[in-house]
Image (cartoon, rainbow, N blue to C red):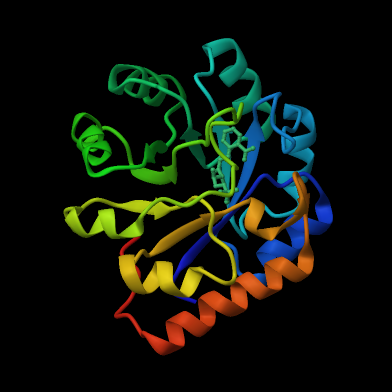
Length: 224
Ligand SMILES: O=C(O)c1ccccc1NCC(=O)[C@H](O)[C@H](O)COP(=O)(O)O
């Protein structure tokens, strides 16, 4: 499989093992108490041990303070920090200096002007994650199962490395890949039977759909 797939919001050994067996490149753990996918740092560390070296371990945090990041990094030992709040470029630089880890910065997209927010982070973040803006009333910055208009990414400079995220599922991933040419995708609620409950059959269907899309539109290879 050429496309990198991050399965986000893992909380059980069954789901984590199944994700890597299917070929997930990244496994995401959510540290946000209001999320149905929230996991305690010590639990995340035990879970990650089962899949470490088979997938990159991603810690997802939202405007976290250093005390919380210290605890998460020490318990999980992540390969990547995903910053899913309003972390400024200066804050990203500080986090990178403290922890020495690659940072994936989430930016929420709804309209063309949202892509202007990329520029201040260029050369600072290692990768972007483009997610949809949360619907009105949602308390979650991510994991809302809503998509943005993928055609907005037509204006993106090819050198920008990103993961496509937001409302992806087995039904729409073919179109999403065809429109964007994304080399990396992220999914959470599209492989859940209820909020926070990963469904192994939905995971199977998602990976099948990615593989089908690749077979229909072969690509020359992955950039990262
Ligand atoms: O998933 C959450 O509950 C969550 C909570 C707080 C911050 C980020 C969160 N998720 C981050 C992700 O990377 C999700 O996979 C991404 O938002 C896509 O979710 P979905 O639209 O459900 O596929």
